[in-house]
Length: 182
Ligand SMILES: Cc1cc2nc3c(=O)[nH]c(=O)nc-3n(C[C@H](O)[C@H](O)[C@H](O)COP(=O)(O)O)c2cc1C
Image (cartoon, rainbow, N blue to C red; front, side, top):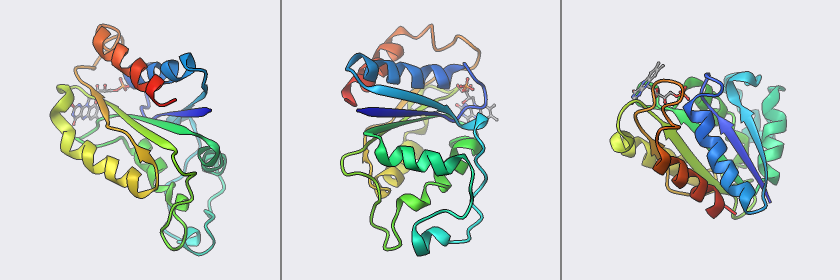
């Protein structure tokens, strides 16, 4: 069982990375192998709209997304974490999501292994439920990709380093969410 975690925050070691790590920790406790990928440290170019993936299913850009797509196809679950920036995911996360287009075959059926789970987690300055409409919308996109998409988990009031550590309930929930992925 392989669970991949993606940190869409440019701030390494801050709330979003910690939150993704807590979810991965829960999965590890159930025996899963896990891997964390920091999107802002990865070489992920923006989609150029060439539509090569619509013809032969393969992206024309050769960068870190080549291996990431291959890893996602073998994973049993993925965890995508992003801070809320301007009421949405960060640009690093959005570039990654756009480049997931090859997960859809030319006929728009899914290339994702059946049953692969997707768990979205967000951190934000505002209280946790402030952006639920956006989270639901984003979940529907991951369903369209073919993932068994779980309910998004959001943690609020995380501005400074260490703000997540003060929220023991949220940390506990994140670990449980991770263990339920396995
Ligand atoms: C450019 C920018 C835009 C932000 N926009 C929002 C926002 O719209 N709503 C919100 O609640 N928090 C917003 N925040 C706060 C972050 O979502 C919050 O501090 C988050 O936990 C940061 O994650 P990190 O510590 O992992 O980097 C914003 C922060 C930045 C830097």
